[in-house]
Length: 496
Image (cartoon, rainbow, N blue to C red; front, side):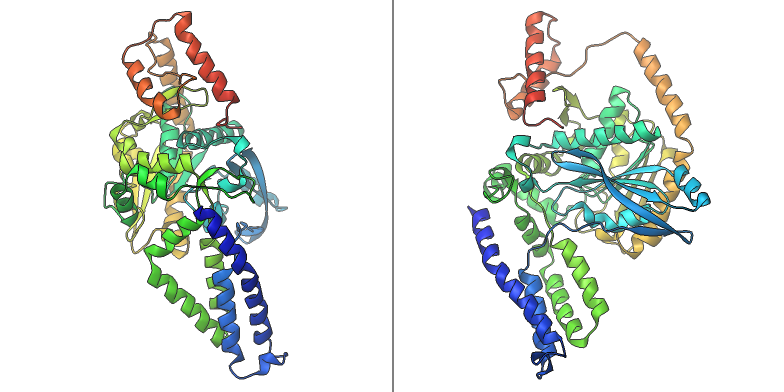
C-alpha cells in the first residue's frame, strides 16, 4: 500500500515540479518582464531548487562518446552484449583510425566491472568505466529496475546473481581466452562466490580479481548499514520494506524493495550534508556560478536515480552477508542453473591474483571488511595477493573522482598488467591440476538437487542433510533430480 501512496504523491507533485522549472526559466531570463523585476534571480533560484526537489529522476545514461588516449581521439560505441531478464552485459567498444593506436587497443586486457545491485544504477560507475577505457577493453553489468521486469520472467535470487556473473566471465573467456574482474561494493561477495565455484569445479578462473569497498566480512568495523542489518530480524525487513509494484509498471505485482525507500535511507545517513549541498546550489544560482551548479546537478541526477530490487534477492543478501555471515563461516550453498547445491569454498581459488582496495574513511564498508578476502582465499600465493588502503578516501572516492583517477587506478592498472603477463603460466598450472584430478579415483560429489515439491527455503536444510550420506544410485533416487532440473529450466528463475 505504501508504494501506491508514494506513486500517487509523485504524480501529484510532478506537474508542480514542471511548473517550477518553467517559472525558474522565466525569472532567470533578463529579456523577460519578470526577469527584470527586483530579486528576480533569487526567485529563479528558488523555483529551480523546488523543481529539483520535486522532479522524478529517471535512469541516467553512461553518455561516454569518446575518450583521449595518448592524444588520439578514440570513439566509443556502447552496446548490449548479453541480455538477461534482470541484467544487461554492456560493452564499450573503442574505435580509432590511427593504426598504431588500433594495434595498442587490441593488445589491452579485457575487464569485467561488476556494478552494485544495491539501489543505484550502474551509471554510478561512469567515472570508473571512463578511466578504465584508457587501457582496457571494458564490460559492465547493468542491472535492471525490478519494477520493469514482468512477473513472467520469474524471481531473482542471490544464487541467480552468482550464476549471472559466472556466465559473463565465461563469455569474456570465450572471446579473449582470459579476463580480469573488478567488483565495487556489494558485488564483492557474489563475485568471490562465483570465482570460488568455478575454481572448485576446475574451470578456468579470471586472471585477477580486484575487490573495492565490499562487505566480505561485515563483522569487522561495523558501520551504520551493518548495525541496522544486525539489529533488525529477517522478518522485520520482509514486513516493513517489501512491497508489490503498482499496476502502472511492467513488473506489476512483483515483490520488491522499492527504490524510494532506499533513497530515503541514503539521505538519512547524512541529512546535514545533503541539506547544505542544496543550500549551496541555491547560493550558486544566485551568484551565477553555473559551473558549481552544474556539478551539483550531475551528482544528484545520479544520486537520486534509484531502482527497485527483487525482494528475494534483497532478503537473501541481508541474511547471507549481514546476518549469518555465511561466506566467512563457510556455510554458504549456491544453487547452480542445473539445480545442484554447491558449497562456496574461496580456499579453492589458486590461479587468480587478488587485489583488495579500501577507503580510510569509508562509512559504508568499514575498514578490514574487504581485506578479509585474503584470509578466505588461502590458496592464492602471497606473491599474488595485494591490499591497498586509500588515505582520506570515503566509499565513493575509491572508484570515482580525483583519488580514483590519480591514486587507485594506477595501482589497479599495474596489478592487472603484472599478472596478465603471467596468464599463460597460470593456465598451464590449472590445466595440470585439472588433469591430475581427472585421473584420480572418483569420489561422491556433495551436491544434491532440489525436490520438485519443495520451496527454496525448505530445500536447503534437506540438501545439507543428504550430503552427509550419499544416496543409493537407484532409478527411484534419480527421479527427483530430473524433476527438479526440468522444473528449474521451465520455471520462473531461468537465466535466459
